[in-house]
Length: 233
Image 1: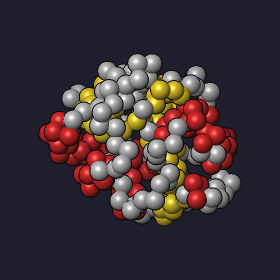
Image 2: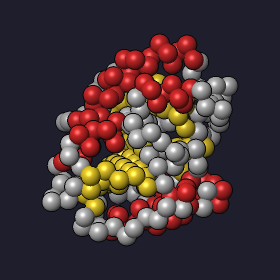
Image 3: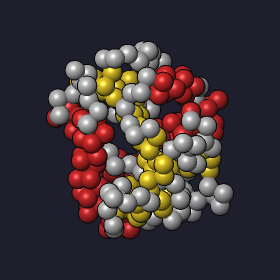
Image 4: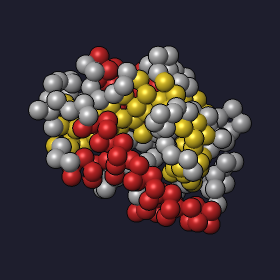
């Protein structure tokens, strides 16, 4: 039985994201890899039960500035070839979309999302997210939906918010893994885009954060079970 989950990080983390926490509670052997520190990505094998690719400040359309992303892209391609369940979050989703041939680029009007934004399911029976779903966002790039993938969710500023490919690969532009503690850390980052068009004020973020993070967290736990436990072998 495959119990190993690989979590790909793009910064030094505390491993307190909801994906890492919940999958360990479910009994998976979670391992973390940091390609940005030249940690090697071993070739996928039957022992690998799933992959979670976290977000980060690097940009897919500027991979020459972060050359480790080239290695990640090649590794993602191999995971796709081996039909390994995979979840990409923000940058992770953009990397998967890129590998599948979709464009990843800044918003044409220079908009960014930094805060909590409502997204809507574009599929029904069942809906991908419930009505009134607000998700944590922190990004300046967006992805097109890859050929052969199904669009799952949309938003007002960035219309493509989630996609599914071959049933067991999902990418979300938003951050359902985010907790209150993680969001507080993001708010005090030197590069936090407070003045960028589209970003919410600190007051607006604080007003929306508790309920949004709680609801998204409950949804995400169920989603993780459906994605990784359902296909576990």
